Length: 154
Image (cartoon, rainbow, N blue to C red; front, side, top):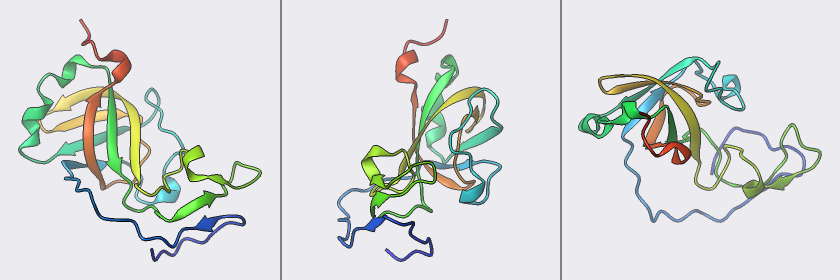
């Protein structure tokens, strides 16, 4: 992978190409106040975080029917600006490098992001939520009711 991101001491890159054996269909995109990765929070705040918008492409608007019954949603998205080749990473907050799978870093072989968000409201094909931590324009993979609250409210 070609990238302009520099490596930190102790980080290790894999030179093994990733196979292309799965296909994802992006069902929309996410709009947030952040336009650069460096501006994104480390963790989204579903209570005090800013309102963000999940925009669904047609025909997925019908898939939102009944979503208002849930207070919390799991949002899966593709971290399209992330490296995919680090085996060991040296996070700023850690004392030593660690394996990619022991971190919640966006740098992963398959950079799928997961945020548990608070549903503020639905507006047609758009969901207003709090708790995201990604760059504006991030491709949307899926939306699911929070597994701990799968029983609808009310």
